[in-house]
Length: 255
Image (cartoon, rainbow, N blue to C red; front, side, top):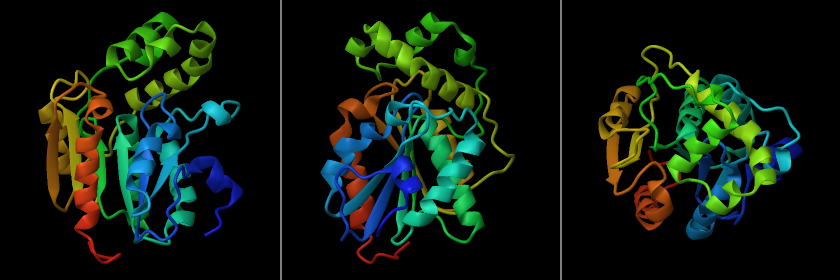
């Protein structure tokens, strides 16, 4: 297929797999970018076509206005993904990305389509709310937060110029996450797999397990050793879970 210019802004294919029967759409964490999923694309190609979403306000989209509302972001991603539905989609979102993926899935299903499965990583269930205010902190407070999550290269955090470049996106993403409120009783019809690190300070195992309340289909919980960015060190295990999902579907339209 030939994506439109808007698609290539939002959707990045680092290792295209045009003959693959399935497509995995990956949603980044707060402050994250599409390039975080480059290793996933490399590992799964050519059996799975991996598309990573690039939010506005970061990297080559740095000059674009930030979207600091999960619903608005989901609306725009949903519109773009209409151009990528020539094969079955599976969603994978980490942290903030899990919420965006959930809301995009809801929008897709409302129109009669939707992903085969939603993988919600490193994020408590949409109905599990904590009062958090990282987006209201000063710059040092935001930097301290991301350092505590061990999801950003310390060399980057030591570069004042780079910090100033990523802080607006970080703050906007934290505002989006911390002001998000799930619609009462909101569910998706696709199966959900929740993935969580066993010492994640942002998501307890019980909070991850409550994703079961947000699907009318099957639910699975996968717990890994590690914290909020457990998948940095357990990537092989996560890829094994994804491989199991895709290998179980020998026909493109199996559900």
